[in-house]
Image (cartoon, rainbow, N blue to C red; front, side, top):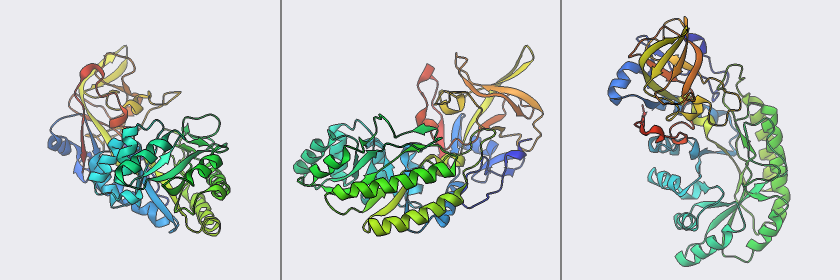
Length: 417
């Protein structure tokens, strides 16, 4: 049955695979049964995001985080304008990965004072835009600094910069490692003191450090260890800072349970660890507030990808549900977005949500490639042409992380309900 996917929240702010209720036998997003929502959208496939699920989750997380911690949303997880606008009212700031994201954030009413711009290879024109907007630039290379200073002089604006540090440690067991060893991200920790001393003679506002070690981690002890090392490193580096600074961004890394066997991240040890680190920071860096930035963890479970079955076929005993959507819309669910060994995202029947899962079927898309696979031999109710298939946990790295132009099929719609 679909029902076993539903789980209670062990703590406010915990991610669950399926926070959506059943209404009239259908999965409901925003309280609207999926068949009706599909009619309202007007076409399939589409992404649907549940505003109440998103809001309750972020508020729940905020309720258990230490008061001294600021929560930022990493827009790259889902930069849909309506999502960003909702997030502006829920979090303390936004972290951007491009000038395009900066425009969305500013249009949504975000405060530039609480925005940071990270990423290697920022173009001079992007740096100029960030300086003009008053956004803090997380410097990833010393080569960015002359462009930032020149933009400030030209515009008559004092640039705001933080140093993104590539530490000599990593977030162990993370799905994607962003630090330790040679990396394109940030400035190597051993070089940072020289860079900091060079800033003293420049007309810039030094805002602090950005130390991001990895993402998609389900081990609380690994996250706690990386956070402790991050704070220790920042305190050591502060000795060479050109001035006291207001921000210490220690990154995120909170993972979500996509696959069978995944254990949800235990929040209690992380909260306790953050309490201790805030006390340490208050003593050693009294002007700095601790910031954590989360993307996937905040939005993943609030979204579903919906496609319609356009053909039901049996090939040598195997049932195939062919849908009008696929890997070109949801690359991550197809297993082609960083998975080494392909695993199924949670897939359910949207229109037969209350029925028992009594059939094994593979859910595939319309593309001329065997990679176009949304669910490999998953347990589903018996489904026919016209039924709706849902890929859960689709609120992060879905629409914008997919090759939407591949084979020239139409792009999916997106709605926040």
